[in-house]
Amino acid sequence: MNIRLNGAQHAVADGATVSALVGGITGRALGTDGRATDGRKLGVAVARNAEVVPRSQWHATALAEGDDVELVTAVQGG
Image (tube, rainbow, N blue to C red):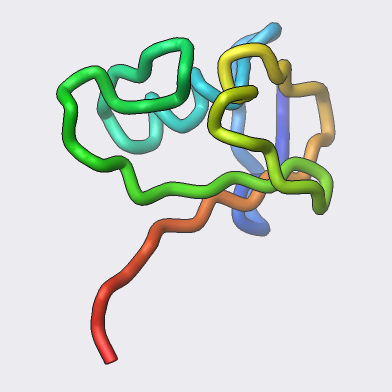
């Protein structure tokens, strides 16, 4: 199915979750709590259809055809 990811068309598998999307984009395995299983900080936030998805809900939040997803990463600096 197709979603919009950061303003661009992006194909994901039917039934994909926010967790699967983030894991695929970052290349890191995620636990059901949304944290990286390698123990390092992920530094990512997700909004689906203009609503923030809490990290604890990534695993249970299914994506649907046409969803508009914004995935942002924290950047340090000044």
